[in-house]
Image (tube, rainbow, N blue to C red; front, side):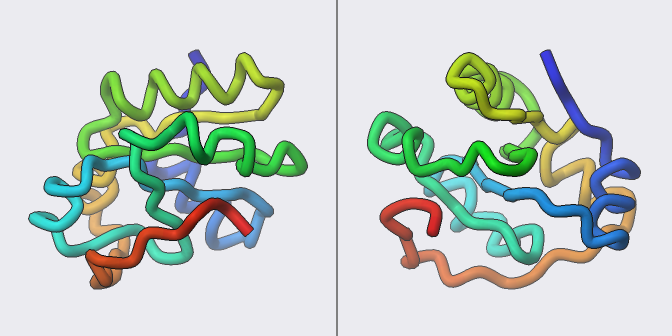
Length: 116
């Protein structure tokens, strides 16, 4: 299973390494948290069959959830099986925040149809 650590992702972001960042926290958890990693896109994990084919295969994809467990790992594995270089964030957004990485407030009602 491919993963990426918080320090690795922070380095990618500071170096502007091309990647797609996808937040797959459940809707209620995301709303409770009220924050997200900047420049990511939330896609409802309950609707993954609707959006899986819109994920670009042209650059690495980083999937994160609340804690980096089953949800992000499972979706990363599914995307990898489809030929996409997908990785899950170790420890999820909780690890990201606990190391002092920046987050931004979210608009909880925005649900994009897919990845542009």
